[in-house]
Length: 216
Image (cartoon, rainbow, N blue to C red; front, side, top):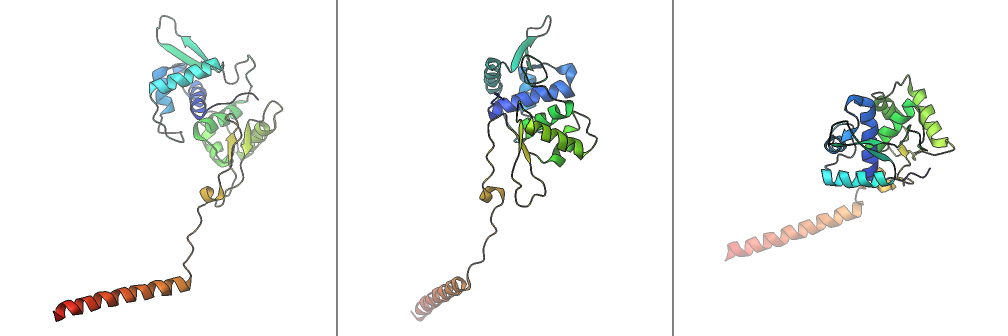
């Protein structure tokens, strides 16, 4: 696999794949529509606030990588864009409907568990059961022209491992301190006694100063 995307490129490609499946009547997308899709408050992680200039720069970079095609409708002067990322021939990888939905979800939402992918990919492809998602993930992780996804180490407190796409290079697992913040440790008994002694001494000093003032 020779595709490597920045975070913004992944968001743009993911949005184009999503809209091609969920709203085909409105696809390809104009710059304004694509910007709105990138900044969508639902089905996105992280939430972004991109301006059209930034999205246009990202589109231009993807055009140079031959991953986006500029297209204008008949009689329209509005430039529109469609992806050439997958399932389009010309050397692009081909995925099943469920594999495409999984990759799309990983591009727009980041790492997710198979259970999360089963629920979320269902809006773009039929999912009979969790076994289908597991099989699709295994295929994406072991394909000869891939791998396209990787299983991340299971994080403390999570029952299932998450999967991430590999279109932005290797994925570094979160450090333990980030994945699971350490619980605060109780202070040793000696420290608490020392602190109490300091407080008592401070109160005594304040009491003596008050007595001196009252005596004056």
